[in-house]
Amino acid sequence: MIPGSLRGVLDVSNTTWALSEHSVLQPMWDYLQQNHESTLRSPLFPVIISVSMYLVLVFFYTVLDLLAPTWPSIRRFQIHQDRTVTWSNIGSTLALTTYNHLLYIFPAAIAQWLWRPPVPLPREAPTLTAFLLGIVGCTVVFDFQYYLWHLLHHRVGWLYRTFHALHHQYRQTFSLVTQYLSAWELFSVGFWTTVDPLLLQCHCLTTWAFMLFNIWVSTEDHCGYDFPWAMHRLVPFGLWGGALRHDAHHQQPGTNFAPFFAHWDWLGGTATMPAPVKTKTRKERDEKEA
Image (spheres, rainbow, N blue to C red):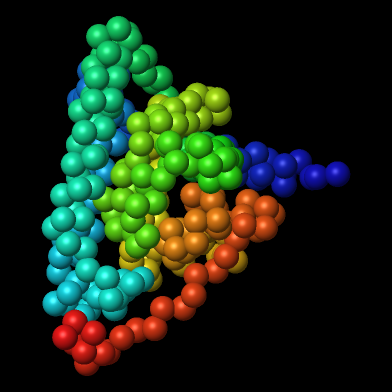
């Protein structure tokens, strides 16, 4: 039996926590609605922020790729230090990415803009707990969906040759390989990214945050770098696959099918740990290049 005085303290504490949760995101949400409501309601908005996020990340990693051969401070974080991303690699991957966006992404976005009514915006922001749990929930669901899709497209030869082999033309990943995809794979990824927040009934702010998070970690998986701040180093107990394990998938295509977490590959017997990469000295690199 909880004494009345203690019960009152707990009730006040719970009320204070609920109010503080709302107060975290509500001012930002109020500002966005008051100043950018028409932009937020546009069906084009999710496409614009997703493409912009991808371009910013790819630009950042591509600059690192171009500097790495002459900057040891960058090169030491590369997974394959004997690899150089060439202008030819950049051109071919960027050409397909541009083609896919012009032929599929932008026409679909324009069609939505013409035929879909503006999105109604809720007045209340999500609580901080709902916001974070929504992103985690969508990531878990997406991870399972893509694990099954990926496994199927490796195990069925026709599916692999027709839809997924294109992505595996590069055995050593770099950021622009992230969307070096067939139209079917690009559609599948975009479909789940759009539908999963609807299935989990997420707030639109949570939906947009999940889309950006998905692009960030997908690009990081393909970036070719093992930075100290990478997700697989931040998430404990080896639960996150990350760039090292996805690079191992491109080296050994029958392993590490899950895009983000590691548990499905553990359970399915398809997990593999990447071989440790020996850091080469400048002398060894110069001898190899000579």
